[in-house]
Structures are given as C-alpha cells and as structure tokens.
Amino acid sequence: MSSRSWIGILLLVLGIGFLMQQAGIISFTAVLSMWWPFLFIFIGIVQFSSRRHSSPVSGLLFIIVGGLFLINRWVEIDLAAYILPIILISLGVVFIFSRSYHKRNVDSSKDLNISTFFSGAQVRNQSIEFQGGNITSVFGGAEIDLRDAVFSEEGATIDITSIFGGVEMKVPEYVRVEITGIPIFGGWEDKTRRKDIDSPLLKINALVIFGGVEVKD
Image (cartoon, rainbow, N blue to C red; front, top):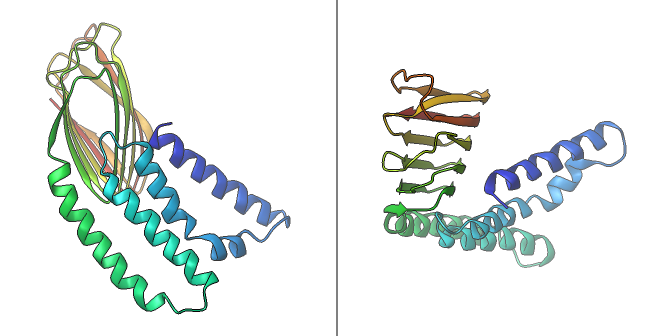
C-alpha cells in the first residue's frame, strides 16, 4: 500500500471520529487525548512500509518515541523528563543518517514509490517504460529527475501528496504537463515550456497542504 493511501486512511479515520462525536456517539477528542501516541507509531509503520526510498532509521525512531509516550501513561515512573531528550536525540540521528541515505538514487523502475517524513530524497529515474507512481512528502522534501525516463505515447500519471513539504520535479523536454488537485494553504507551479498537443502527457494529481510542488524541464 502506498504512503498516499496510508495518509488517506488516517484522514478518513479522523473524519469519521469527529463526525461520530458531533452525532453524540463517542467522545473522539477524549479518545485522541488518550491514544494520540499511536500517531507516532503510525508514521513509523508507514516509513517501514515504503523503505525503498525512505530511511528505515526514522521509522524505527518514530515507533520508539510513540511507544515511550504510551508507556508513560501506564507506568508510574515519570518518563516525561526523558521523552524530550530522546526526541532530540532521535531527530539528530535521523538528520545524520538521512544525509547519507538519501543520496541521489538511480532508479529504473516504471513506477515511482517515494516517501519522505522529516527527511529528504533525491531520485533520478531512467526507466525505459515510465508509467507514473506516488510521491509523498511530509515535513520533508523530494527532488525527482525524470529527464532520462522514457514516456510512452499514452503518457503517465503521478499522485503527489505534500504536507508541510516540497516536491521538485524535472521532466523531459518532449513531455507536456497537466496538474490538478487540491491546494490548502499551498500550491504548485508548472515551469515547463508549452508542448505540442500530441506530446506524451504527464498527469499530476496533487494534494498540497502547507507545501509546494514545482515542475520544470
């Protein structure tokens, strides 16, 4: 399952929860106040499910931090004094390992599946039959170079989710771009030059929340 699908499931659960609270069925805010550490664990699981272009180190650290918050609710020992230092250490480790892990990767697959959470990725695709894929950037950034990829006459479709993050994409000169989606305190910019109507089409479906997407050739 792609990271975009995981985020969609999370938003769906939150929406249903608040809807049930408005209907007087449950007190969803009380549930969140008790179980919100699972959000950290959820992000960690998503990291592990998309390890191809995302660091497994950050996924493990998210799970550890979420687990510590849960333990702090069940154990009488005051772990609050330790949580902040552990978070700072975890973020430091993520930044150190992300710097070496997210070097420019050369990818030849026809479908992209890239996720960045509190980190960054640089990917250069050289597929001979590029079809599209998914790009998710949450509190992170992604630089995608498709200039060496071969697009068929049918074109390709890419789904982009950018939440407090940014995605920069470079496409071949012969490809025309069409961007649609939902911008919420964010947006996208198409800097590609006008192409002939018969050129292969790259469709981009973008969900941008406090983020940005830039496409150029």
